[in-house]
Length: 141
Image: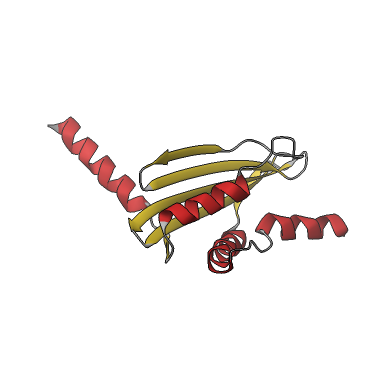
């Protein structure tokens, strides 16, 4: 009985943890757009093949992007189907610096990524992605 209660509480906790942003676009369209943009040719510099898990109505994508030798940007995207014409997306971006040994969540980049996804779904074209603009500025300085 205790084991069943523990399992039930764990399931409820995990289902409550998914608090994504609503998207007024079908799950299949958003999923396809994300895979086309984030899963690229393995020959690209700094590219680490992402982990992709899919189930009917659910997609999980984890990617660690090497910015330079010390800096890694970890991106986690969870996509969930709500109805046939809407979905929910949760984006988490964490910057990890090996040199200074710190981890910092990038809220501004998460918002920019969400806006880039919405722009892609609305216009059909991707705008600049958050890491392309943030780290390009650092290189110019």
